[in-house]
Length: 195
Image 1 (cartoon, one colour):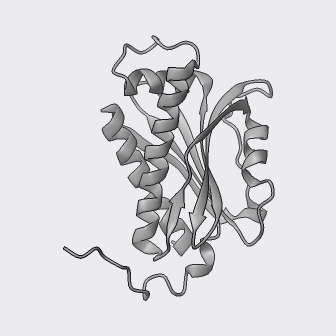
Image 2 (image 1 turned 90 degrees about the vertical axis):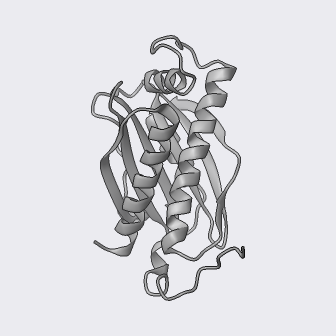
């Protein structure tokens, strides 16, 4: 396992744990990919058509390195996650109103925060995320927005998480400059807060 894959695995596991704790449901890591961006493609779910709408929660990454992160769910799965996070009966939420949008943004905020906390255990960098920005659009447009205007070299980390009780799938994608730190990450000291 290379360093980028190690980051992806740890980040995905931390995000799954955070989502599981929030929803009080079992969450598994179904798929994982970590590659240089020039070889990357984030494929939509096999069942998706070109006109299906997805909910994307975007974050800018700032600090020692820049990048972008997005949590993508189908509109139906987003509604189920809203219900689970709000302790409502599944199927209660049918539209992405202001409450649903706010809830999905907070779920994304928690998951991205957990992922970046895991990354900081391996890479001694200041890497923080912005406030969330929610977009509802087709899959290809969501991913196009993610990588637009970013410089090189970049790596893409993609993980699919499955909330098992309701079979809801969410895809977490991170595009950032991570791989170049492979040689120095473990030897660099990590600052720890004083007690």
